[in-house]
Length: 93
Image 1 (cartoon, rainbow, N blue to C red):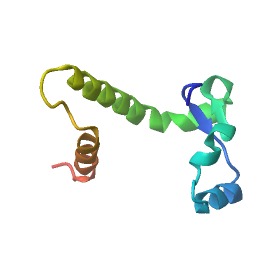
Image 2 (image 1 turned 180 degrees about the vertical axis):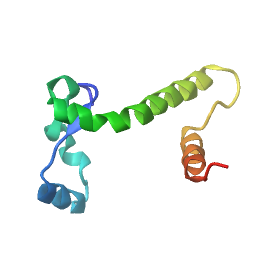
Image 3 (image 1 turned 60 degrees about the horizontal axis):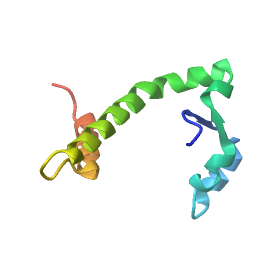
Image 4 (image 1 turned 135 degrees about the vertical axis):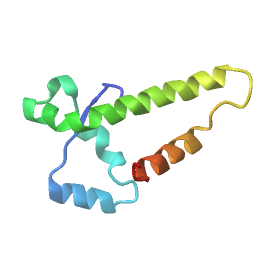
């Protein structure tokens, strides 16, 4: 979102209805967005479990963007994240 990190808030019945629409939740996300600095303490706390993964995603995107600056093919973003998902699903040994 242009305003940065935050939440999109729906009531449960509205969330279900939005999911069934062709454009889904994304078509209404801007209207439901609340920037982090405007969130209540409880809302901010609900974001904590997602922050580490989002930081990893940002670091990965920076790595991919940097690879595009080098000579050669660079890193394919779709394949990179697909591999990361596969790695996340594999049980640790």
